[in-house]
Length: 346
Image 1 (cartoon, rainbow, N blue to C red):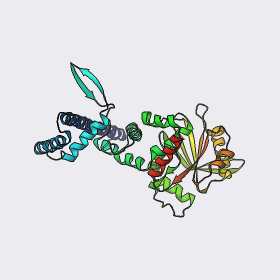
Image 2 (image 1 turned 30 degrees about the vertical axis):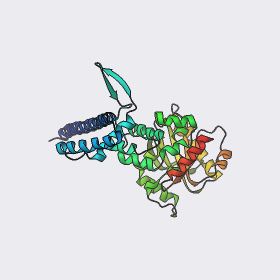
Image 3 (image 1 turned 120 degrees about the vertical axis):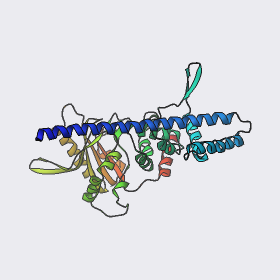
């Protein structure tokens, strides 16, 4: 068999395999969606039946027990009283719905498309803050987060970290639209949470070790950076006046259509660090970016910083260079929530 024939056959097999994989994925998605809508409908039926009872509390408990017994006998596991209660809660949480007419019969539909899995919704329902829950639902749907990634983003307090850098109206917008990235500042977090690199908070390590840990967990780091980021390179060298310089990490953001250069600092941020980043950004703007691309963003990830130093060192209208802290352990959600509440009450 010739190489051309081998290539053609290999390409043919790959197309068939890809088709089957896509079909299986579609089947799984259809099953998940059907199951979610079915559980929503069961929850609706339970709520409506309970409302017909005279002694609602006792009547409701008995309904769940009787229904659990009958469904378990006919369909097996999955219909315990606890599971039925979760379906009821699902309807109560997501059933603030609109009513549409369908052939003289009112049909109750949820107020969203319910595109996530049942496991996702079980987790989301445990988030008490409605705005926070809506935010994570939008982000999980738009970014196709697995349940594991949803939990990680929640544990890393993504909502609180984004909310702290926004005014009241923008915080409300998070729950309505998710994270919208229109300008450089929209893509930033402070702090960035790098618990996935496995470096304890009090361990001594070098900047090169921190960089290597990030590269080893690049997929996780990209998720922490947020939407639209693609990796370009590490220790990217450029030269002028016979001097060599290296940028720790270089990314490109497809949404902002610009390069993002990142410098890592394990100590306290200095004005020299900000000056160095200004030089990196200037070089990329003048010699690397295309005319059709937007200005380069520079981010210094540091262990400690003084906001006053950053504000005084950088221009008042600065929209390109930013300094953010990083943490190698998960933050306290309680403390972050308190900061948000204080900000909203100001």
